[in-house]
Length: 88
Image (cartoon, rainbow, N blue to C red; front, side, top):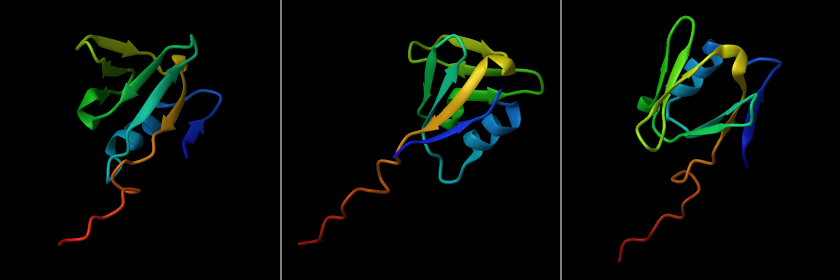
């Protein structure tokens, strides 16, 4: 199940916390204009004092202005729900 983290406007501290989660849980950043940026690795996002950067699948860098960030949606952690194999 996905957990949304929304508010009237996301702030950079919430994005920073999502990036530093341990263990890391992939998430998507939704902007107010409808664009969505999946974050599969914590290294794909850099959070500064006034803006954030996200590296896209094509290795482009997008500058994110905090008021443009609408929400974060966490993806299910693939390893957490995987069935363990029994050793033969």
